[in-house]
Length: 232
Image (cartoon, rainbow, N blue to C red; front, side, top):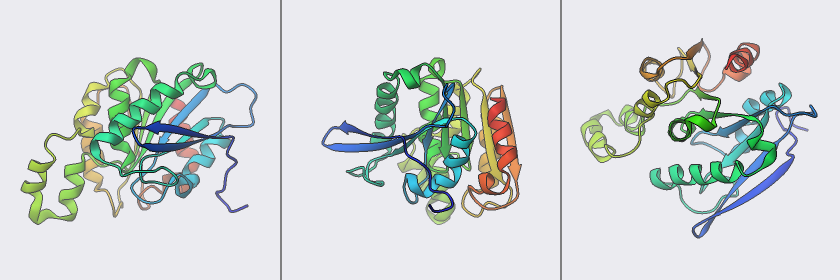
């Protein structure tokens, strides 16, 4: 078994329009599962790419649901800003029909690009979730696009002005416990975007800062991350 390969307890398929979205559930060894994490990964790879993050969560006792949106992994179709958001809500509604999920505390974890849908989903389901975890997430699609193409910043902001923004959605999560995980030396997402997300968020909230690269906190600061999540 590879270092971060984890046992998958169940594979799921959800039809959405003409496409199919796949998800995977990994359950901890404990008999009574009290907490579930819905994990939304970043722009690169698929759910298997991020097992170095999800495996420690399962080992810590969390049931983890890992989702590949359209165009990722075995999911079909092409992702867009609109269908990713709507698909996230559809999956959330379907998952809450399951006794092994609805009878647990539910946390939403967004890694990098996944932070956009995680924050949007948390905002729209405040009474159904117990916490939100943002790991190296950009403040908005427009902000990260402008970082890589600064000469087109004004055009990008105009084109994406109607797209949901995590830095705005986070303002509407008052009362929901939130954890922000960001690296001061992140080469992908500017640290300042993490600070803006945190500053825009209402309490309760906590900020975990580390010093290695993008999405490496679970590798280099495992105990610290798990303790912070447990505090939620």
